[in-house]
Image (cartoon, rainbow, N blue to C red; front, side, top):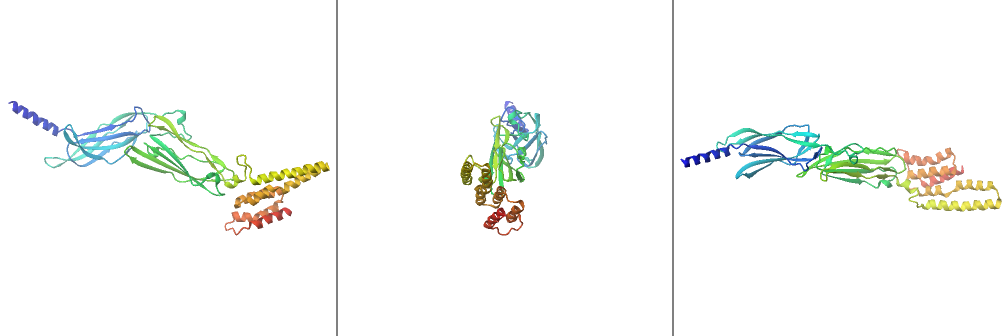
Length: 392
């Protein structure tokens, strides 16, 4: 009698194991107790089954509280659980809450076509995972987090690279510099990264290329990249500086507000800079002009002492304004057409050349610069024409 009861219990236990329910669960793995809006939440959807699966389809209920991305293909494998071998499937997701407060993710349904071991028949069944609720806190609203464009986002890490096609502070006249800024953020999605900063300066012509956004999936989470490109060309010869652009973000690793910065950028033509005083140092042309000015001033002083006439000094000073070597020196040093045009304009002004004669003398250079199909330009002939225009 005792043997029969024991045998019956064994049969019932085997039947219970055979009819053990299939299990599907949602397992979030938050990396902090206080999850903030936009922070990545690793989630595993795990199914444990006791029969081979011939066909399956997993469906996640849509939600306006989360964005998510699947990090890899579903992982199907066998595990021994409580001494019994089971078929396990795991789907790894990265969730991104887009609202604050209590947010619900799920349910998840898994439609299965299982194979019965005894009859080898295929049986349709559905397993459902209960939804999970998560509490989402707002992003910090402290002053360091505020950016000029008002964009806020969270990331596990953020890096910035700034590349230039040439030195923007020493451009050739008419040359354009291309600036490429790349943001690479860990633990976020491309659409969560900020928009391209707006660059508007009166002295600058700006062209922009389409924004590039890329997504890379890794076991640790998604990595988002955004690329911004600008082309800059000074509108005038004077140099200018683009101000720095701060990009703040909430670092979900350090749990602090941090920032990266697009550095300030000086932009200008080398021809303009070469004609200016740099850092208190005088160019050779400027030194020559100053020396000549001193000599003529000395001569004028002696004339005043010897002749005692104010008129003589005034006439001498006026004569110096017409023969000062500074503009002529700049005219000879100018290497490109635009720099030559600026030097020539200064020269005719300093020499008091009549406007109609100045325009006639400058006309060959203007044609060489602005004509659709300019012909050859002779610098020596141009300088001779300027001298004839001065003499009238």
